[in-house]
Length: 287
Image (cartoon, rainbow, N blue to C red; front, side):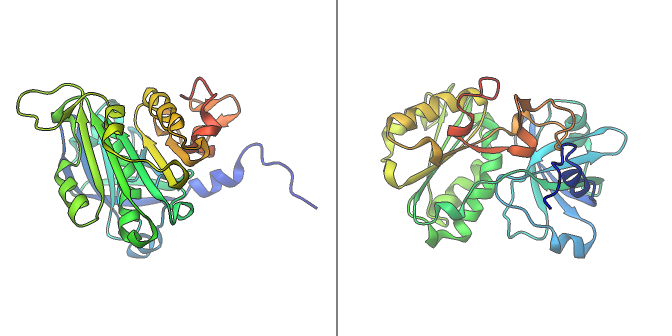
């Protein structure tokens, strides 16, 4: 006899109730608003057994302050720590930015769907990010490097408002020379010191060659970016089922209980945050 529908999502809640005592081992300033936190699970056995897939997220908790969902920005093979890129925009993030190495926090997870990197085997991979969207892209970039022979060309397009807001710029040369990735950057506003392109991210399409029958795309950034980027990819012939977007910005509790992330019957934290574009393109509140 089949089990009755789990309308209260008790199974998911049971899995998500397990927390991990963790320590901040580094808090690295990236810009005026963003810091990269290296967080290590304290128990060695729990740390070794913790696994995640590119695109998933965790809940990070400050006791007495609250908790927030954050995408994991490190390699799935890194057992030493989790990398979390956090922007100072609210109460919990503001408190996190005040913490230094040695501070204790709690994490739960991992949660959510992931980028289907194994499904992309044998294809070209186009990764596109706007602003803070480069943070969740680091996990699939590391995955692609660890499995470099599984993929053909890997191209990264990254756009930011200003040069000062570019994240992880210190890694770009490493990605080019060691990871064998092609990365192009562009900013909307630039001064005379900026040596690169000026404009919006779709302006970079003229600098690359896309094989629509042999390419997967991953897009991360502000939701307004998805429409323009995915629409342009569609005009080039790339199927919407092979475009993947992350709706992590809509998440709140991570368990589907607060209903702040739901769009109709779709819960971003439970059904996502990673979706193929065909699934969400007509969800007006999501995109």
